[in-house]
Length: 303
Image 1 (spheres, rainbow, N blue to C red):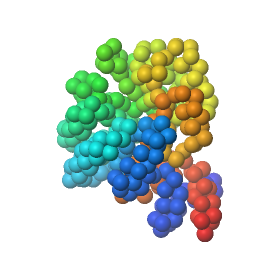
Image 2 (cartoon, helix red, strand yellow):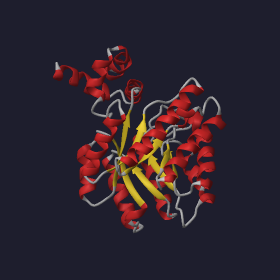
Image 3 (spheres, helix red, strand yellow):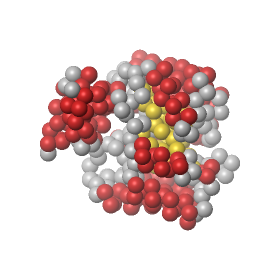
Image 4 (spheres, helix red, strand yellow):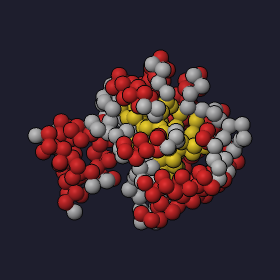
């Protein structure tokens, strides 16, 4: 209860207080900050996926600005020889305002990445967006089968059927490419598993289906039992190293991350940056109130 209370009032604190905590999980406000963080990770044999913070916009002018920022980011990343790809949130490009404009903007970003033989990951957002984001992915995957992938959330009760339903897109030449995560949005019990054990069980069931069907998987988790479960499935199905990777958020569970890298597995870290970091941080607080106590400790520790 204390954590929930603190999480509810922290968004009203001055930004400099929230930044004390947030800077550990966000690379910075500028593209240069993201490049520096990415180079440091690359130097430690870790790939990245870059993300410009900002979602749920209110105007198409914002959508166009976000598109331009991503086009610049792609050029800048390849100029700086970053070993990474890019994650996009469709609501940042007007999904909830004009679906066709959103498609055209995201298509332009995918085409730009494809010109470098690069890759764009379409993030999955909250449940009202799920159908539209799967449709968006389907349209783009047909045209750019090697350059676009999708995020799937194991806590949604629909996810296993969604994976099965997209098998018509399968091609041995260009395997489907998914990031599998637990899910971060607060969803009703009617559509989402709530218990820790349930979510983990369905995560591993989804992961096993992907391995069995030769789908490339980004195993996105900070949960040690899931990492260990993934290791067992990798061994069971003799999954080659070029058909999976582990993925984590910037600044989260670095010890577990490093142990996965030392074990010889590919690791990719999600590197967010941008001036809209405050909204990202406060949303994370609402999703995980336990983080609030860490912020309070950080504030008092830093004085």
